[in-house]
Length: 257
Image (cartoon, rainbow, N blue to C red; front, side, top):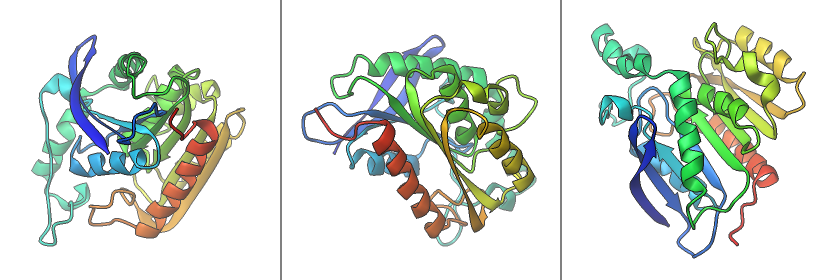
């Protein structure tokens, strides 16, 4: 595998981005990974590597770049990342502060810059682009998919937060603009996406022409898909990968050319 960290120029500055793709010379479909509230870190790079090994050029942008180089990580005695709900109030506020300054509109605009960037890369195959997002990133992939429907054709939202809200760019307001295919993985227990919200979301998206699949993972909790978390659910996350890669194969070409 080849990998590098580069700066993508946006309207607001330079966005640090991790990029990985197969070592063999060729052009590979792009998959953009959207970070969760904790920001970019090694576990997200490892997820990108997993995507890259099966024939894609995977990118992990640092959408917090407007606020500097933010890195957040809290571990328990077993070395697992501690869930937000298990941290004290002051630490929770510290973790959430960067998210409060990052608007959905900023992520949408930055995605435009990413698409422009990959169009000029020799390692990226022209054509449809895939996305995968965790937590707030799970919401972002749906929003950017609605804003760039001609380019973003495969969207994976894993334990996405607030997919129905009063936000102007809330996914449920623009769901009819989605094209291609969407996969959503939800936890059975998730205060940020309770099952009542999931039911409403499923009802709305199933009325749209986009191909859609949903999995609600029994016993899983918010954050289950991240392998370094204290509540990681391996069965649920591996099921997600099975369905996400199936979607990528249908909507993107996984082979170098």
